[in-house]
Image (tube, rainbow, N blue to C red; front, side, top):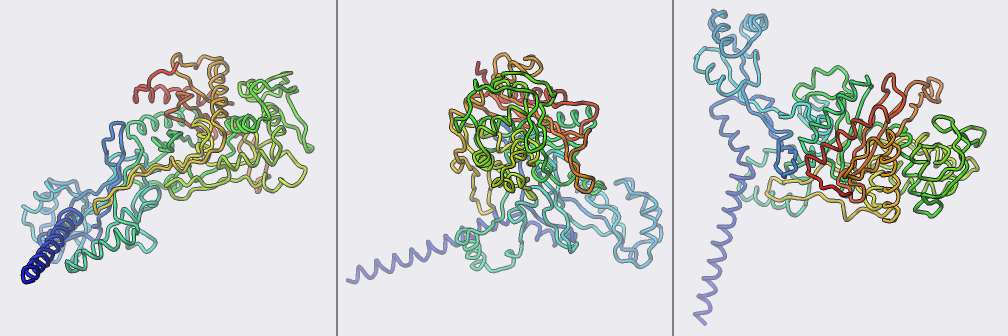
Length: 580
């Protein structure tokens, strides 16, 4: 009995020491790994003042094709130099000469601030590197104030700026927060709270366990995007050159994996520099029009109409109708883009020649209810769920309002992409259904979240993708769109010998606001182009659009070359093997 009692005491003592050791290990982990940077900043206060602008924040990373992480947003450390004129010597010229020999300072500003007698603080320069501030410190000039500061830094400058967003002051002008883009959407993960540095060991440990593991609340983290910086850089150049060439109001490009929803590039032209965003006078440039601006997309919607007809069994690629070049409906007349009659044509010709009357024929074959059911299943009229702020849902109100009456004109125009509005990202989500075997993906730009406590979360929505059209329908519409490229686009000149590319152009009139009389501008258009490749097992879907290009009529003229430039770049960069 005594032996058992002794053994129990030994076990209890062992458990106590094991528990104590575990507590110490956890404590060291939080000290050195989780909060190491914060404690370093705390230690710096012993030697240097800390600027009121000092803050800490999680990192945002790009990821290239080799899964290497490249910084998109990080923290940069430097110093502030200020003057305490109460303590300065009277020879301000000597101060200026010695300091300006180390860092550039505007003479007028310096003398103006140095002349403010008995002023305890006049800031004269910020973001000074450590090597230069050491030289200034070695001058030993009385009245110089040196403060350490941190600021948000974007190594890529304008690279993916509309996706990344930036950090700025909130409405109070006191606190820094994420503004626009990922900085705003993931602000709860990226922001840092150093208040736990000042609680006792046991309180900190159990507080972290509770908040990070039990409550599973928003946790401090770094985020890794699916944006490939090499692809983003190339696509941005294409967007800029296209916008400049046609003097467009704006041009945008999205490159996405239509099977997973991972976005490799989102480019907008014109864009802005994240490290110098305050110079912009037009704040609308900060938003991301790829997710927040809705347009009538035009003829790139015809493949969605055709796929619905194929899927429902109402038409096949060989189904024919009599094309007169126009169609009267509800007191209005629908024309083909060139108003030409083509006689008896099949569904392949509808896509090859982008016939509005043919798209209306497919809609009529489906019927209004089925047509609306398919378009809603594509995600048109709903938000995509993309992990970026300020997403708009577009507008299909005319279809909903006229479902239960005899009018068909709104459905007819919707069948060829007019009368309904969609954001570029909604358009990409819907068109991906054609490419990926018929599934509705969720577009996203974040690939992984690395929590500060050491856990990681991989982001994937593949299992959640809903089947919208049959796999066979996806294969059939892909065959038809490959024929569009091989036979019709630029007379077949754009066909790539060893690669199948499925694609379609779109040209849409831009609607005029009601206050200006409604209807459409006679001379303002939106051009769009989408395609995916290799067509029967696509790696990428590429979508381009340009708003109000000047002195040009059709998207085939403005966007064909940029699209194929991007296609060929992606084939070479990712070393995609031929499929035919």
